[in-house]
Image (tube, rainbow, N blue to C red; front, side, top):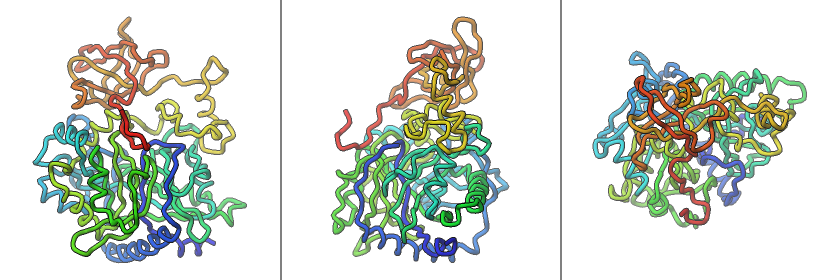
Length: 491
């Protein structure tokens, strides 16, 4: 069974959309899906051969995904490779340089933080008003295949992987095997069409957690495949090294993408809702057409948009086809704008807003746990701890001691590590984990953890900024309303 799975494992196009534990999907036809799998498998094998002589990167640190160059402290934290480490390049490296990108080390890669055409704040605003292309090829694209793949993922995450339909996605968290409920990393899980009767899941994890996650999955898969009774439930994993992953984000993203779609497949983006995905091809100029690509609706900015997984050999051509819409509609954007956009959208950044000691309940991510998996015997790591936390103390559970909250801060912006204190007695009651000036709101926003009881919206606290107390108000997130396409235009 194990060898049969290996030969059947596809390297199909992939990736998904944020934040949905109950998403519906417009499904591409089985013929299209299997054709996409066959084409992409052959490309993947060719890519593997071409990369076999490449030097391996050194380990990235545990710091996480998107740099925050607006803020010196977060920029230092995000630079997850020392100058002595060999940095990898995404397929778009030369394109970035040609467009005047300032490159920084992050997650073991050379990554663009901003471009000469726009400042970070101007790029942020442009994304909200038009659309931007973000290179997220540094993220780790994984494929899990096998009859036991869904059950395996339901052990290491609190997701309802077994109930996902093909091309549906869910945000989830990898959980430590010590039953603490602590988060190893956050991840997107997308179910792909089965192949030869075996389930397939596309799992995207964070770049700066690559080595940590690799070790975690290796240990957990060895344990799973060796367990008694799992002979027919073997699981194999493949990493799609070298593939491109681009995010097209903003209100004009649908029009920009639709213009280059090969409409012989009759793809209707209006019917592709947030959290759904479909295989399609795009026009690359002349008579050329891309391979079948997995196009997923969603992203990390709070805007409508798409994420597209692309073979390395086509990543530049697809990106240039998108840019051909013109600079008044679409621009390249870097890690700086991506960070401030995700913070306005209330989205977590691992290594800052999430870590090994944080549980999904403390992080305000209880919604990623399906109702049918909220009991102590749900079968995932830490289920007992998490089930107790889901129930308030007043109802017999343990509740939580701290909660993730948003803040609007007066005066100077609060940075990561700033203390949150009570206005009554100046006692420390929490810590800021991310913060920046909001280009959209014109206010200073922050995210952090605060003692239970101080977490209600409207609660006034102080934040110590350079030792000086600044008034802050606990605020619901997202700070800026999300505009995901769900079939009805957002207000």
